[in-house]
Amino acid sequence: MTATVAIMGRPNVGKSTLFNRLVGRKIALVDDQPGVTRDRREGEARLGDLRFRVFDTAGLDDIKGDSLEARMSAQAETAVDDSDVVLFVYDARAGVTPTDREFAGRVRRRGKPVILVANKAEGRGHEGALLEAFELGFGEPLAISAEHGEGLDQLYDAILPYT
Ligand code: GDP
Ligand code: MG
Image (cartoon, rainbow, N blue to C red; front, side, top):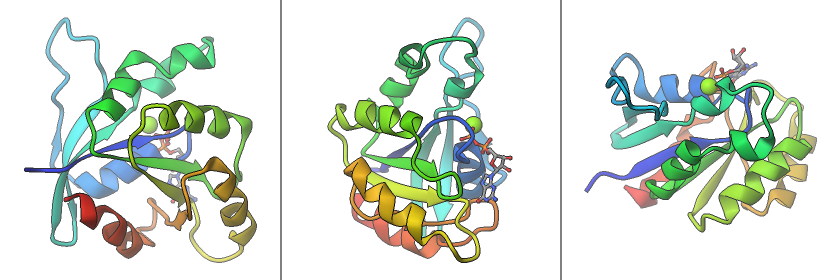
């Protein structure tokens, strides 16, 4: 059985960058059938010797001028429901924002295990943003840089139990 991982979080925290990092060039676009309105992306992730399915909830970012409620749209919640574990991503440089808290609350209510990911944490000096993230209730954040490929060993250890 292959584990399925959903990447969640507010727009611009680096979800798609992480998705692309995990999937590399082997992107499987499964939702390009005409008439299918779901626009989450799905791919086969490779992380060391781990293989798992991953969802990028990209559609959230593309809905403009809408309420947060609307943006946490059915497709994203379905991605969470269809996953074994959620990677909840926030921006370690921006710190925890009210929108992060809103998204976190909605993810929490789905009842799935969550791995908290502090992205954009390349280099040093993000300790404050790591500490404040405990308030999200998902435990200790893993500091990574999706763009620079840092911290992926921690991500490996966190995902391993679900595979
Ligand atoms: P999404 O909206 O959550 O899917 O975020 P994107 O993956 O589209 O990234 C949003 C912005 O953050 C882009 O400009 C990325 O280049 C940038 N970004 C993503 N990951 C990192 C990272 O690890 N470090 C830094 N500094 N920027 C990043
Ligand atoms: Mg995106």
